[in-house]
Image 1 (cartoon, helix red, strand yellow):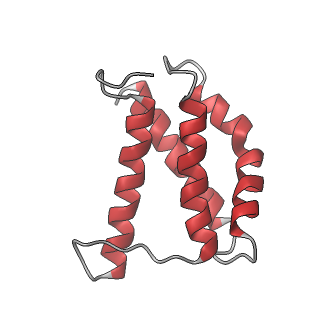
Image 2 (cartoon, one colour):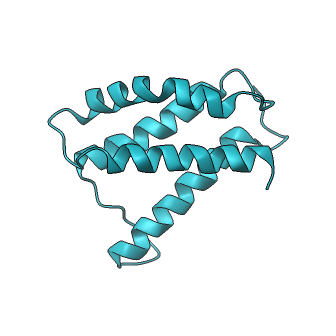
Length: 113
């Protein structure tokens, strides 16, 4: 496993922990997600420290974190065109989130910043 993959796994674990520590409903999911993001920024920077990343990477990670946590706080159920089973849809959503984190941390060569 390369450093970017390890970092993506750690970030995914951080998102999972944040969701587990907070109820899946909120009167203001947007504000709560921002507040939770601010609380984890030092941990995210620790994960990103030492990686050869672009300066916009922290912002991309923030977007993914807040998108995932906001959906959780709203109580959104994961859905998928591939299945009607909620459990399978949740697993597919987690796989997609992990893929997006890995792509942000180790972008294809054709991406231009």
